[in-house]
Length: 186
Image (cartoon, rainbow, N blue to C red; front, side, top):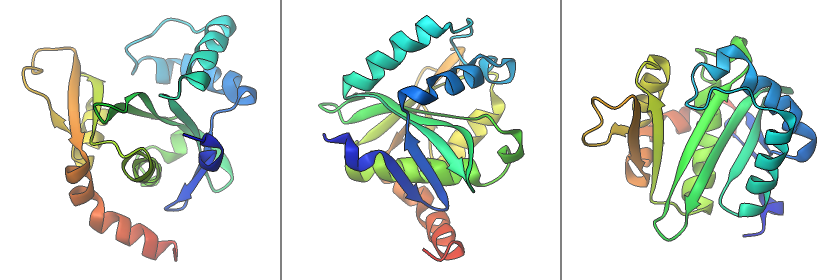
């Protein structure tokens, strides 16, 4: 897949910019902050060397797509689909909002729908599989609203697996997407 045409994704009033080398320190700073770090499975301090090694891996894998979320000219977080398995038709999405002004707003949903259109329409995935820490109630609620369902036998697991099919995603998002497109005159 030629990524150059997907360097920027723009829809629903948000713009997603493919992560470039000049933004990895910004992302590392966000990711190391305690407010973000406490919601992640990997909670160790990320060094510049670790970040560089990670970026080299994801930028050449052809299976990892990380984007900086921009809203009204401001970089506010990161969204991704990683470990894409094109044979199985699945990958693991993720999002975090760095800027507290946008937590509890519809902006994360806008970014998720923009990324979702890329996942379902361009990558042609059949399902997304996520892992959410059991005590991250905000993320669990957010993902359930998007249509994710707890996978079997996950009730007692700390890092729980949830799945979302393309069909369920389309059903859940249809009305909201129509509203966002109309609201943004798109």
